[in-house]
Image (cartoon, rainbow, N blue to C red; front, side, top):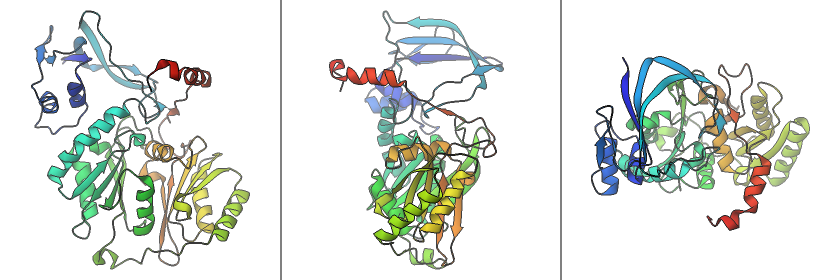
Length: 404
């Protein structure tokens, strides 16, 4: 049967932060807001129902949702950086609206991350760290990159205490707070790695990982319904990367992961061969100035192009461990762009390719391109773009706006 709903706009900062925090089921968001504020959250009863709303709200809308009533929603631009597909969602029927005199409507501009709501994500990140450390004291730092929509990727550093410890932490992150069940990628590093510095994280990946051995893949798990890269709505895969130094027990059944760096002449020659043989390649970036990790952008022409480029890179560079293939709208030297593409355009199980070479070493490729017909089952999101003329106009008045 229909149930009552009250929506508050413009509450105080602690209440807003509490509302978007995935607190444990045993703690109310109002109570958590009180902890952040240092004083009790003042609430008042709604006019048309028994629900309580923040007394500090600027605007309150009251009404009901009928579980049997649905309507089309979208397409609309979202915090993921895409216009999402049109879908059926529940209808909120509004019966009452109350507001302060001269109310202020609080909102944020959403677009390609990092965007305005990412500021809330940064604040939430600092809230999560002590909560996680209570349950997992071995965790040193926990970082949700804003470019990964502030929840689709997590980088964890920890004090490793036993073989397999990193995988326990991955499982712990995915199962601890509800919001983390939408985190597609969990990267676990040692405590001497700065979780917020991609050059350090990627250097540790190349040094300590055998991609096949140290990658955990789990299929058919809960996924954000806005994630159009998942095979079906609300269900997709997750990937965990163990980037820690390996203990003897972890090395017992696998080869030494150290590879011999190629000399600069070989690298230059390999890059020239790649671009000559594959004119669809737009740009190539060698992370940490060697071929262990290569990021490629392409002018994608057909389904399967991404995996074809991975195989081409592997044929040129024996030392390569990681290839990330992106579209031309991604700057392959900018990890903001790369992480955005990886977290929004990949279902890990579908879009990851492993290769075991004749020496026993493994390689992994991540296809972070937009998917074509035949590569996915769902309607693909359209990237949000800004009107160039509007961008030019805003750029010309930054100084007089006085907000930077």
